Image (cartoon, rainbow over all chains, first blue to last red; front, side, top):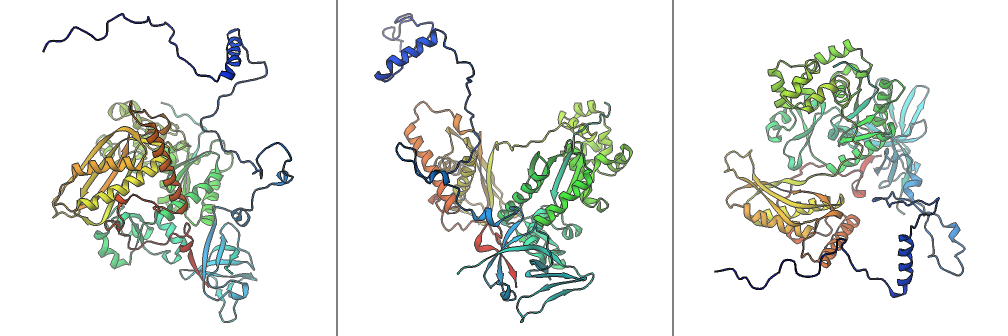
Length: 190
Length: 430
């Protein structure tokens, strides 16, 4: 088949391309005058007033926390409470002092009922706190974690049960006891 | 090249037998006993306690090969609990960050700290780090300190292997002659970046110890091997050539692959597996705000079942338009799977890899792409991720991933997620 020589684009036909390519912009009629005015000012040599700078927006701006306002801004009476709005209480912040070192454990057994620790309660345990005489601690005894009151006086180290039906655990010289962490709170369901 | 005294100083902090140590925190009964943690699907040893190492069990030994030894010595084998290890790692890294303004997290259980300009005795500081991680998190760590990252890695190795150092080895505190004596006693293969092949090639050049490598001719090393190894030699001389990478770069590829709990024969099950791996990979992709330009699918039989006929095949499917849409990625993966699937084999493994990753905001669109459809897809993925984040993993999933998932991994002896699931808290006897 032979190539047709009719039709198609003719080289050099049509409007001559402008050396500076153009485009159309749609603007609201109401703003037309203002925009033209701005463009003219600019062409006349618009300068940023001294003391002002232009900032580019960061691509990933850092997050910033602001207090929550109870009301949207509007004319009229501002809410009298807006100045007093604060962040709601967060239990993690209130109850956990050392985030990395805090663990939750669940209680199984009755040996600490007189200290208010019942079967099924959850404990907040902070490993960063130094175990001191009188504190309730988690200890590793015979390969198991146990919760008891820590006694350390006059060279005697023992773990005291807070239930007369359970014996204390005494440690003799050379016997190893590992204190796992210190109990800071007891969580109960009511 | 002269030995320049620099002021750089790095610490490498590394958890000892990290996975085993994580398990021991909540199960003190494992203390002092031989323990291994097995890989996904209970295949090979991925972590060994010191007791298991002493029995001569090597890393990545398949479980079935050590069963006899395990019975004899009472080795306790645990399935891997990556949820627990990840949380313990995050706690450890967050605590370590408080010891230096500059930190590079190198892997789940090790990180570099920049100690430039620290005036105090660094061995004492290393001991403080060690003590605090042990007390706060419960994980034993070793600390290697040196003027370069490569030497810090080596120092960590020394701290681990030679008990006299008491877990902290500061090579910067040694005199040149002492350092050389130490390096002369360590095999070149222990150096960071020197693998088995490189070790053999170096041995052929009569370079057997770290000291020999340190004193090798740098020009020769560059000519015979690479600039990378030359840099290693310089680093061994205490000249720091590698800075800290404090911001983890986005992944260049995202792989999701697992072996099956039992051999899979049929296409239907393979399709479910490929579909759920693609789902998981797409979630990771969106988390780092990337799109993928291509997806690779592969399937394989088990090389351990030597009597079975063996087959393994993979295929890369370029996408017409880079995407982060789970549905589109699954669609492409399924098409690829159909091309490579051959009946009559017992498949043991399948996987999906997302490639040619780019930032989601700068993707190239097709000439005829439908922008409305694209926005709908983005919104759908947002809702999907949002619900799964709020209500738990896999609350919403693609039906093509299957519901029963008979092919899923075996995890016979996995510990509870003590720190991430309220229902699985560790029990304390009372």
